[in-house]
Length: 399
Image (cartoon, rainbow, N blue to C red; front, side):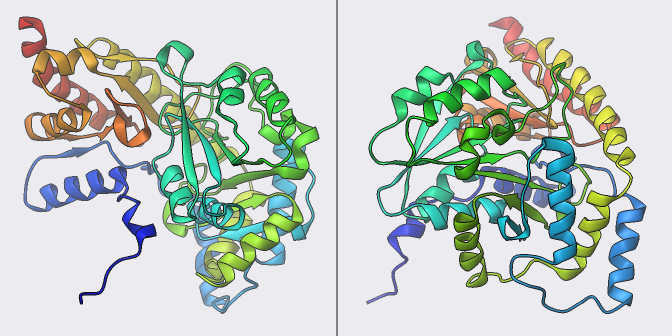
């Protein structure tokens, strides 16, 4: 009898973002002229003072195991960051450092979900949330908010999704893939619903907190809902704000019991995050934050260009975002004009006919959309969008 895979792993699928990024890289390696707008990775180099701290850590022998949950110096930097930026107070025992915020989210699902427990996830969602819940034997429950709602669920929708099996609620603001961000009032409305269901833990993924340009200041979920502090995990990391994706450092602050359980999961999987990366992340969080503002300014300029340009293409509609480096375009009109059956086929059309790699919206729980990353140069974006318009427009105009 052949060895069989677990039912657990057979429930999940590979990340469509990584799949499209890999395909684009393969085509480029084969000599094809491909522009990749799939990956969510800043094109900036890690700021020099942060990189220098990593190099110095290597030279000084900071290359050994650390405590599973992170070094004391990085935990203190995270505590200071939460207080400075979010007015949230944590102790070291409430902080966990992981190998990226993706691991933080996975640890949370593994620590909180039992078989059959429901995890409520607003859609459009980051592609990995439902599969993480499945890997923990949980049941992902998607709640969809389309463009007419600005891609943000309402308190009424959340209330309707809650059942006796509900155990976890994941919210991502600003959102990957839409760029939408919940206002303080909207977070408080969701908090009022959750306050009635004390069995539900909240995981607030705030990775894009500092890639943000809405008129209202960014508000953390726990900051908007202090009465839910004791069951809210605030998740963040250094990857996006400091262009440190490859350094792989994510972190969270939350209830001691949940954080301790997450640390146990991590201790039996990867153990500690890189000692070198932890030292560099300490410098990133404690140091001059001017670099964050400079990158944010560039992302805002790209956002404005991309959204306007997409809305000028026949069959495309794109709402402006409040942050992140993604544009989420509704492309049903273009799909209909081209006669393609779904957004996956549309993404294939763009890859084949325009040489541009985007991610189909169905992977984010939002069919008839595509996600376009503008974490690349303005020159590349201009070329890519001209290619897309050239590939789509003649057919769309005939239709």
